[in-house]
Amino acid sequence: MPRQIIPATALLLAGALGNAASGGTELLMPDFDAALGRTLFASKGCVVCHSVNGIGGEDAPVLDFDKDTGPMNPFEFAARMWRGAGAMIYMQEEELGGQIELTGPELAAIIAFAHDPEEQARFSMDDIPEYILDVMHGASEEHEDDEADADHDDAPDSGEDHD
Image 1 (cartoon, rainbow, N blue to C red):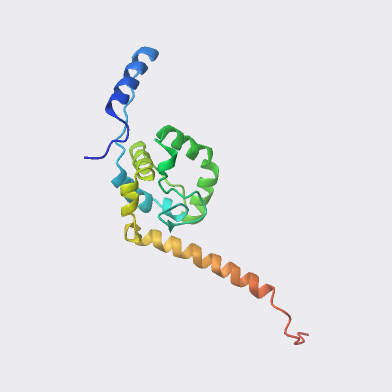
Image 2 (cartoon, rainbow, N blue to C red):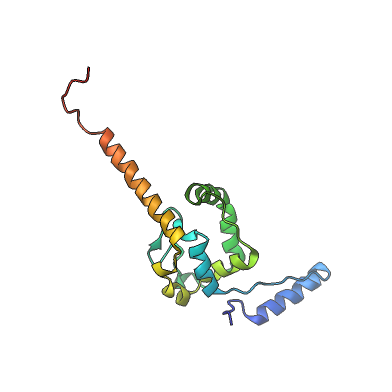
């Protein structure tokens, strides 16, 4: 059974307040399945730019669990993603060849993983599918090639005449 981060009483209270305030509108909260989120974080390609436990990319914020920040609001996490959507989509297209598509339940699972220290402790290179590892290694090789080209361009002239 997936671990629920939001207490059931909070959901009941939110549902009751939502029904009273909006004339009967109901919200369906997805499962916040951190184990599924660990799998999706790797297989969807989030790990190409983000890291957990030092595993992953360095182009985007680290998503290590931080016990000092207290309880997490999943809607605030989604709002931060929304504010960074332009940059994320650009990087996804550059690194992965297209935009990552997430369903609501998949997003909830990734949010749960980003806030679950036990699932993060289980995260390893073995979680990353081969096709994502290829992207990660290809990106680092391209970066190394760019640095080598830059070094070559700055090399001193050999003194040979090239008439």
